[in-house]
Image (cartoon, rainbow, N blue to C red; front, side):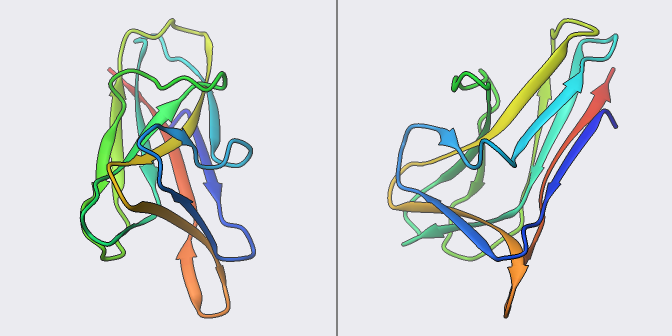
Length: 138
């Protein structure tokens, strides 16, 4: 394990997007920084509750740079139904510069309608943490 971000605020949080263009979910709290291993390869895992309103949309997660650009090849479909699920998106990234510091932000977009990411606990809403993990890969 190279790094982990586990964000579980004291209130249940829902961040909604209606955009087909990726945007940061939370550029302050859902960000992860790590040192690239000698192989130059990492697995990045994203896990949180996901919901799609009206069931007709695909909800996507990806990785973004701190400059607001999408990281090529990192888009994953996490939900295509209105049911609340807790998916894990696993992304292999290769060809990074060994020993360099790398920072990613969690992004999301939807094909239509609304995509919602939920995390945190309060009252009767218990979504748990949004978790970002970076693991060294061969």
